[in-house]
Image 1 (cartoon, rainbow, N blue to C red):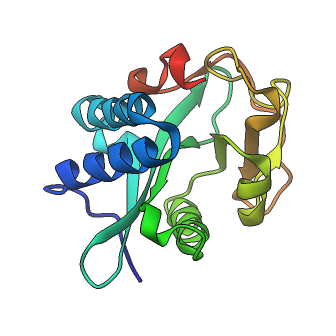
Image 2 (image 1 turned 30 degrees about the vertical axis):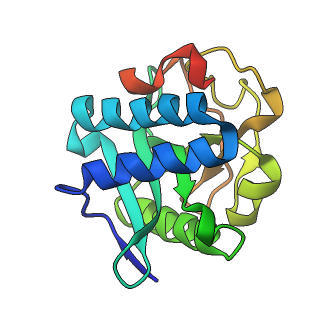
Length: 179
């Protein structure tokens, strides 16, 4: 398995991966919703505020994760949020997602990111160091529909101290439908 952070020129393939993966697992409407999210991210997020990591298996794209910048009004730390994550259905439950996440977290560490957040299944994301957090630790950018899914981790080797101030994510991710 090979990893890359170069996605320029491959946006259509990445969007298709997210659309197809979510359609297969959650239905066509969810696939279209997540496909639109990724399309909007590519169209509107500055390259300095987005890190895309892709996994390939001898050529075909088999997985992708996207990290985008979050800001906390009164906190100088560099924070990114992981969302969304997709692994092609034929490659699920084979360690691809965990490998992709570990690689992506390494990329964030190398670029000086202090904190990474995500919103999802605690059992899945805890395997790569995420812990459940509350909004006292990190305010979410929108009301959470699944409180136990708010997760975070420090990438500095220090404990995750509460992030200060109101949060803001990239506009593409601020739609309440994702929260």
